[in-house]
Figure 1 (cartoon, helix red, strand yellow):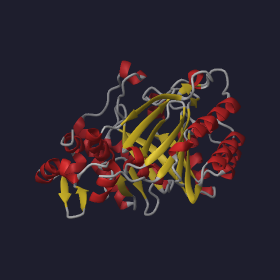
Figure 2 (spheres, one colour):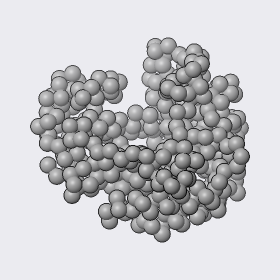
Figure 3 (cartoon, rainbow, N blue to C red):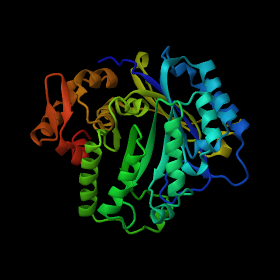
Figure 4 (cartoon, rainbow, N blue to C red):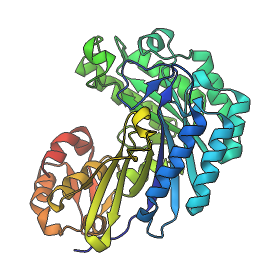
Length: 380
């Protein structure tokens, strides 16, 4: 089977934040002595230059500026960054350009400058509207700042905006989780990311674990929260993502559909398909800002190929996060692997009720969503 080029996105990592949150396992670094904006910007564009051969004539359909807290950068810096990107890449006319923002760093003039620079969508890290939960999570903002940030996003000429919200927080009950959701819905975001807090290794919470809700309570939160969101016109399209019709995050859709993406910046990951070499490569950039900006080292930390026998699991691990049906042709064209290699696992998934198998597509079932790990284990 021959590989085909999938759509291409760009991820840009800005690693600095005001304060490291105890649950955060992302590559982020608390600001101590100011941010070297101009120096880092120059390195980002030089990093992009080195990856241009991976573009292979494609147009960029989405850009995601993540962190850290990208909104610690000035409007002028984001303008220079996106100008530099546009000089080096062909962007689609309707390119979605998302920027993560912390409500504690939101200022009206700064946000307007980001939009002027080309940002079309903000993802605002609210996590909770409850003062005690925000304190437990180490967030630097309060509930009023979160509401103000969402209100500002409504007023700006954006394609969309997202609110990030967590559930399953320390000692949280169903009423507390639903109260957070109701407040978020009242702010009318076109998109809501609603995901369960998990304790990740090498975080402050991992060394001092808080008391989290029991499994039964977590299931009640998920069921009742899903019902509330659905009743308010939000459609679940991914494990942890809900959107009004037409407002799904295109950048994340490209990830889950096994698309390609360039990754630039500290610790950024990329995935690139090379059809002529029948190869899929994953790239990781140097993680620490000091090492990343050391000119003697270059930017690449590692580059590895995804072996053909590993591609089915990687494909389904991404694809089955989406609730939409998966065309069977996507599997063969994006992995270069024959359907015969996965037919036994697919049959077993069908027998177990985890997938509905049709002639030209596979549809994950509600049972498959609930037991996603069991479904994915069939492809190991």
